[in-house]
Length: 250
Image (cartoon, rainbow, N blue to C red; front, top):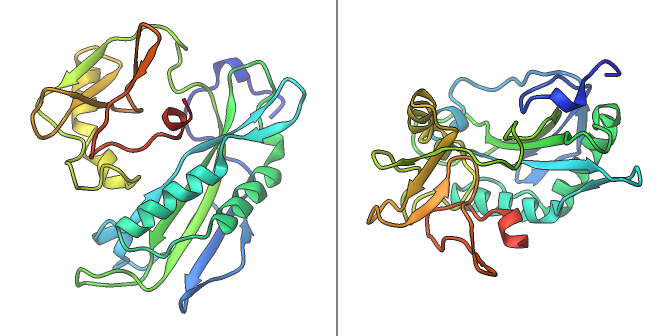
């Protein structure tokens, strides 16, 4: 890792040493396991593959000016994953388990944490999936909570500079009272076509309007939308967008 140019690191996947896993079986969560394998073995009829019983999170570990490593509001990500699990009827990971797994995987991959001053961070990806085989539409009996990490550069490679955005009028990311308020993969699959269209036309990303009336800004493709009006922080109030932890903090 001494050869990595932290300043030019993209926002993408980069192999690290370890990931952590915890299985839910027989109605309870097991022990946290450290693994060096990049693969998982699941049944071809697993509910995550057929019925979308899947949820994930995204958070970062930062190296401060004082050399200490800090993780931004890890408990809030744990609570948001609990909301996702409740919405699609998955086993709910306790906050304490989520926090333990985050700390374990960050410490195990300490050599991949970018140093202070380069704009790079260690991205942490928790993933919760239903693993039991089913052919009827019903919840899984067993689940896997997995977390891996990868060093990343800024999501927007040009930093805090203006970018051109396309207002998406032909596609909705999520519907009111649907799954837009939780972090499931289906919401992102629904956004891929409009994002590809935006890129083809030369835009950086998309802005989605409300699915009901198509007249209010709902959110951007990669993040919540906000604006500054005078000295007031303005952000949408919607039933179909993910509650951003950064937005909530602001």
